[in-house]
Length: 253
Image (cartoon, rainbow, N blue to C red; front, side):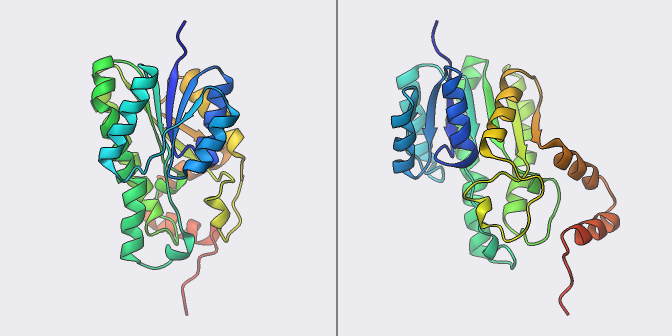
């Protein structure tokens, strides 16, 4: 029996790395991509069925080339997990146009480039899962999030749109909305992160949602995500007041 294969972008650290190890331990072939080749090779050397395919997702031509390399090695790919992201909280507090463009280039357009690279493969195959990692920051506007939050909100909308497009081809499109996960990216935050979880916790939740359940959105931890979902339905005046108090966001004098 042939092993199943998953391609993970953003696989060098954080959730992507933990998920690569999880799928590897479950007997899958795992193709991992990221810009930091040394970290990919380190992980690949530690796990026999993990292979490194270095990639900058902002290069749409390279995305297609790397996916072709993966299908040449494994022939079949069953799941794609697109989790590349960037976040710089120090530059999110003001309207920094270049910073916002850079965030969208990686978080949104990098994901679009990755999806485009696999689109025809999955439509021809008529099966499989395309997974897009967003964030609770994409549910509704938050203070000091001029680039990251909007980029994740755009991913939410994109994923819902793609759900309809790929469903016609029997391909499942799945959205992942993590809460606060301890990663090199969230280590940059200068505020207390409620219900902070480990990447391994996230990997277990994602694996269960992809393999054992047929759901559109995998979100966790529920105590946080459900609360934010409820808040997102509130009228703007009430929402702004509650979020202002919860985040201790104050007007400048």
